[in-house]
Amino acid sequence: MLPQDHIDERMIAHVMEVGGKSFLSNLIHMFFNTFDERKQTIEEAIARNDRDVAYRQIHGIRSGAVNLGLTKVVQYCNEIEAGIERLSHEDIALHFKKLQEEIVFVRKILNDYLEE
Image (tube, rainbow, N blue to C red; front, side, top):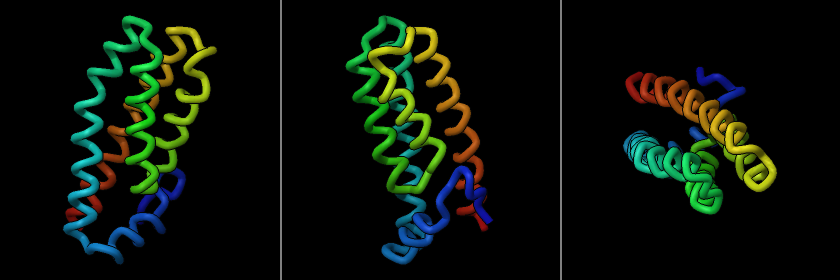
């Protein structure tokens, strides 16, 4: 059972219906690989206060998270996107830290799920 406050199990079931477990596995691995690639770009953008780059990278992460039903990841991305112009540099960094912690959490959950 997946934690419903973090992952929409209906989305996972839908992806399984469409393409099976291997398709789901590929989507999950692609999402996390993409996050890993974007993470450094986002950290660098935040460090130099380049809000446009940070916004575009976060938006890309959000899009992938929607497809997998990663509800908390989507929530944190939405918070960053909505506040990108008004939040302080430090607040953006804190929001991104929360997003990273959620990514670590759901990565473990989904990897365990795929191993079942």
